[in-house]
Image (cartoon, rainbow, N blue to C red; front, side):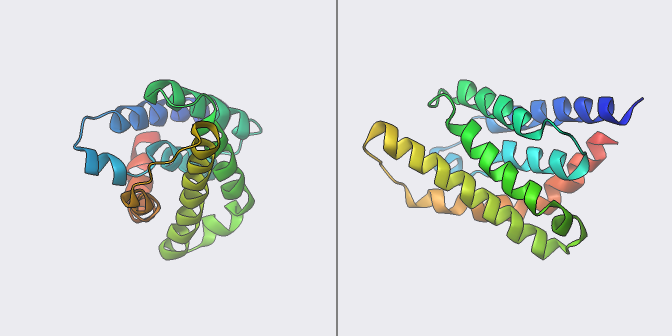
Amino acid sequence: MSSQKKSYITLIKITILALIISVIPAPEIVLYISPFWMLLSFVYWITTFTNQWQLFFALALGVLVDVLYGDILGQNALALILSGAFISNVKQSLLVSNITTQQIYIFVASTIYLSTLLLVYNLSIQSLSFNPYLLLKPFLTALLWPIVRLLLSKISS
């Protein structure tokens, strides 16, 4: 099987997994602090496979998440594109870094993701009911990166 075909199959598998995990019913507090599952799976895919169409796939996956959650169309797509662009720029450093440094990169990407979501929401709705628990999302996303990376490497092999 070609490397490119394997990367697409892996993308489909981890996308389905991320979508299933993200729609599991949970209490409201857990939903506020749950990590950005699609971002974690997309970062894994970016760092594992080389592809020219990464930003296009970020757009497609983001729109898929928007439709799934009923969010403003393009909100998660823009956030995933910006976070993915950051990860693409630091990809070489991310690949050779220790786990703590990788978690810092994931934290920054998650912060970009959250900031974009909040900015688009605030600009479009003109009122923001901000919950302070949202600030825990980037921390939890970064903390779960080593576990997610390990599990996704098992799935993709």
